[in-house]
Length: 145
Image (cartoon, rainbow, N blue to C red):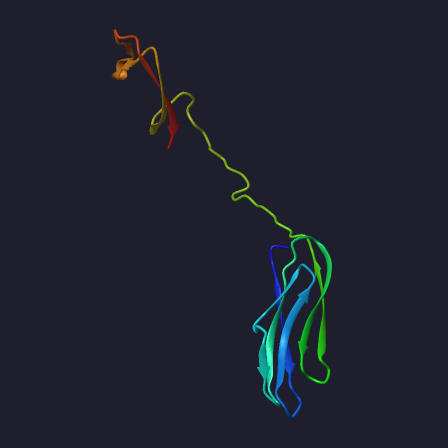
């Protein structure tokens, strides 16, 4: 699913007079027809092209039909439609499949930058780590670059 397929259907007037197509219909919920809208005239010896599209929404087989009504000797012409929908198959992969950080000194914050802050009752005063007298604090979370 999540796809569709389109096939061309040709309607040919092989007679000596014009044919008036009065209706073009499609059955089967997964099918639609486009390219020509009725009413339309097909001149003697000429043809018109329709596009039949199969656009399933669930897995399984589907059937339908295009029915064309006209003033031709065979006033109704039908094209059977059949399709099979399969469940879409999606896969995921990761790259790389393994990450090695090597030797990293524990507790070292060299080349780190603050990623987020949480504000509360105490506040650090610069790098000295002293409390300010107002009782607020800002806790920094560090992220290694």
